Image (cartoon, rainbow, N blue to C red; front, top):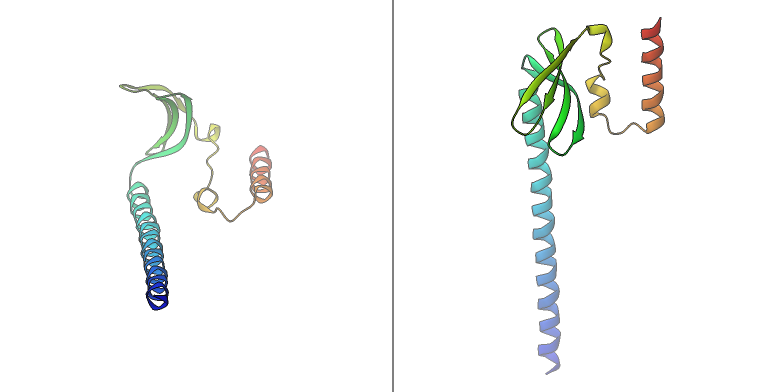
Length: 125
């Protein structure tokens, strides 16, 4: 009787470890697949003439976007069923955040704030 209890406990432990390993494997595959898809989509955006600069959510399903189309900057209102051009901006009216700052999540808030202050100070000169 003791032998069967010990064996079932060992079997349960092995089952638990097996399920845990499968779970970790699925998490790792999901993580790497998500990273691959993000890089693929980012590469698709890089080679286009239309580049979203900034998006502001007004309400559910309604956004205001600044887009760079070729060398022009335009502001559009994006709703559920329509897209309306609001105005065109001059290049000096747009403060574009560099891609490195958008992607670099290792920076802390203080570093980002200092970088933005420097860029604003340089633009004012």
